[in-house]
Image (cartoon, rainbow, N blue to C red; front, side, top):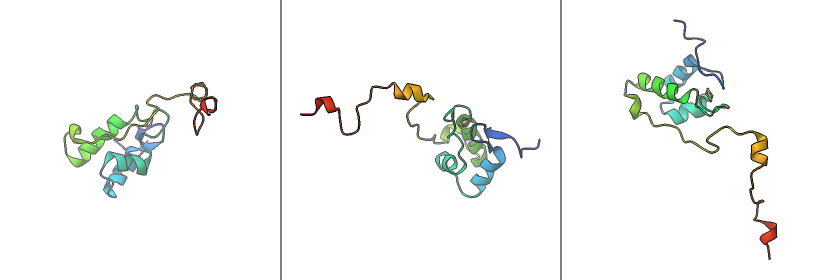
Length: 101
Ligand code: FES
């Protein structure tokens, strides 16, 4: 099977070949592979690819998938629209002006 155009991360167009090349260049942790290739940084925040990336990394290392350290999850944990973000009740930077003395 030709792996040249097999996409590992469809959101960021990261191919399996690019992921493997990055590993061969010395990026041996999932976090560094994420930062270098962009895998897992797209709209779905890795829901469509990080599990597969971890499995691929385990295969490259010849270790069980459970030994792969997963990447740091940062909020929002779920994709949000700008309208949802704008509707949040967040105090302005520097505090709430209504509570100021
Ligand atoms: S498929 Fe990789 S971030 Fe969505």
